[in-house]
Image (cartoon, rainbow, N blue to C red; front, top):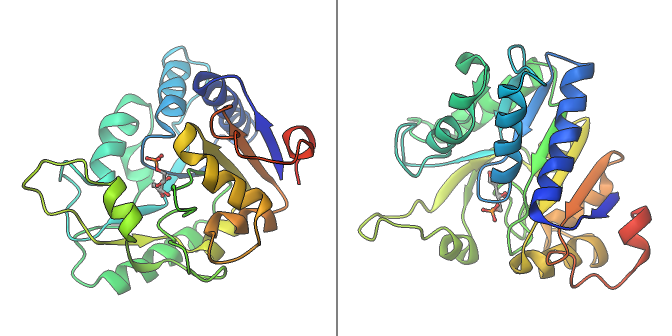
Length: 250
Ligand code: F6R
């Protein structure tokens, strides 16, 4: 894994945007796997700015998000679909029909998960998958204990994730389940671009890179990929013991 520690959240976002844009330059119809959540927001802002400056076009790009909460529809303020539309897709020259997330309000969530996995495969797979890491080491919503060859499926969110997700409104009943791409699905992407910033991620990053390769830390599975880049800010890298990892990867 190519592990790089950059000086700030913005440096991480700029480097990540360079990698995304290079993919799109080489392959204008690239299929990007996207993550929701706080970590990639600076990257998405950077991509929006580059798109406005006509440095990159998403006109032929297709996107597949990692996951979506179950029990809420695409217009719900807490849905990842809504967050992606408001925070990224609506600001790009991307065709909305080319942006995909599982339906959180599907009548048959298991069938929806299977169809999503099949859709990714039928399009030829993901070229570049962007990932964040949960405080408990989850990737997508593959919580600790997820099998390393898991596929897209319905999952129950762990207590840590449920706590981290309590963003309100206060009377809102937080979703407890989600559809997520599996760890096996994620590892089939041609390249992985993993972002972790902030002190809250330091333990998960150290466990992922230096702990056992095990379902107890789903992000440790990223080490199995032959083209994975992990971009860290100094706070997220603070618990790493090995200095080798910093420059040359593991
Ligand atoms: C989001 C996702 C999650 C997040 C992770 C980190 O689509 O799949 O794995 O990447 O929970 O979330 P943030 O970035 O909000 O700390």
